[in-house]
Length: 364
Image (cartoon, rainbow, N blue to C red; front, top):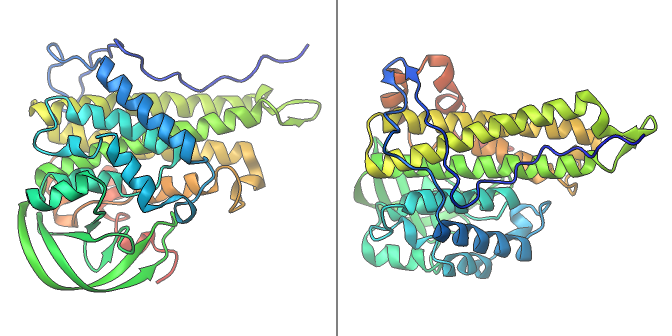
């Protein structure tokens, strides 16, 4: 008798889905405030946004594409034409961040190339005359701690981060830097800086959106791994029939769905300034990073040596997960400001100590 097909891929939250209430306790008090008046339902408009992003990604991207092969200014403008970048602006609406989360999940699932999370964060601090071009996809954002700037070779708007503040940088020179995830980073020389104000609020938006991308990327890997496990035969049967293959994938899905719930809860808390939103935001980011890395590990177990081939089906997505999971948006002091109060040193070390731009470079 043939074993039943391996099915560990979640269907995703449909319109009207209501997540359960969730509370927890951290070192600094409750991690999640009262959920009694919060709905995490995905409404019809958000479902439409997710569907539109999904169609664009599937029509224009293949899962195995690397950022160097997949990125183009025209593709980035197509994404902007869906209105998702403008949602991060001041007029995005009360549910803008949750809408961005469902869009980011689809972007992460297909490995859509471009500085999506950085653009969302930058839209919170950029002056209106610059933000308009960014929202239309005509201008591309690089946001980070100079001199190493993510997507710096493709950007024309540079937002530097230091001391918890954002600055608009004028760049005189860019040198290409290779990174683990294959993204277009640059080492820049800046000649002038314009202060944009505190970065604290934008940082929470970044954490949530990059966390959603990580969840989506992990789910995309699980989809691919499950499909492979349902067709690959060893020892006379499908490899998905082996517990050593099926169980790690199922465990990864549970972790990803839990992280997905935390990310969506954090989005609502941040946008509405619910009690404990800072702790929830950072815990959600950490949860998404851990779950996505778990999914990548389980996927590589399924594919074996084929998973390490550069033009294989999971190589670039796995490397992007490794990079995104430790890519901090701000300087170490900003992370310590929250993590020292609310998390153990071990829990925060993932993003504080490993989250330096130097670690993300293949060589430099």
